[in-house]
Amino acid sequence: MSTYVLVHGSWHDGDMWKPVATHLAGMGHDVHTPTVAGHGVGVPKNVDHDDCVASIVDHIVGADLRDVILLGHSFGGTVIARVAEEIPDRLRRMIFWNAFVPAPGNSLLDEVPPHYRALFDQLAASSDDDTVAMPFPVWREAFIQDADAELAAATHARLSTEPYQPFRDKLDLSRFYASDIPKSYINATEDTALPPGEWGWHPRMSGRLGMYRLVQLAGSHEVMFTAPERLAVAIDAAGRD
View 1: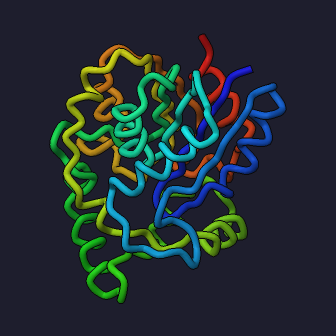
View 2: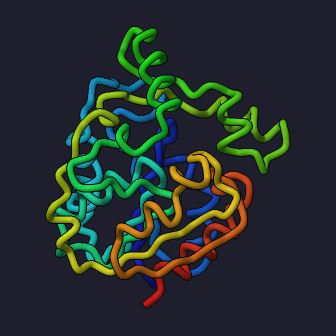
View 3: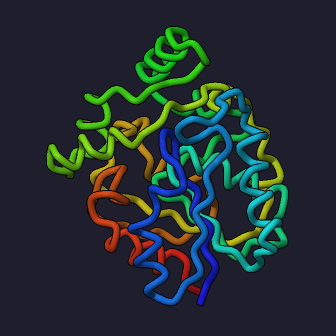
């Protein structure tokens, strides 16, 4: 049995991992799915990236978890990279699933195409609490294009607004890049949330990890909803010794 801590991405919360977590638990693993600070419905959104990191550190330390396989999805990659700097002695392996691995000193916004930066700036400026709501057309066509219309609509309805300050915060990450914690990268081959090519996930993000294990599976950025068992199998393969 392994202990997994699954860190969700933007617009999500920890409960959205439930189908994947159920399959992993069925394989005999202990699975934790904390919600990152500032994420979810009806919670304060005035958080920065350090707050996001602290919420995951607090969960791991508070539950006295050790020998953890820590997975981050999308924005969650920026969180787990910083968690690894704070509590490296509690981690056994890190898994990045179509996740950001920012270059040293970059923010998440530095790692996305200009059209996303412009869209996010506009949406945050038009909000009353400096948050970004996920537009349905972007969700439908770029994030969950492998779902039918009913599932796309149902999952979009579960999303919450995203605090924008964590996207802006610059991340030094010098300790992360000096770390020798084993790393894996899961690449969903139909993931177009970042446009393939110059801005794509793999090998642009994965290649920054140095030596790493690559696991690939068919699916979109939201294969956690469209094929949770398939994703659980990939996570198990990425986390094995």
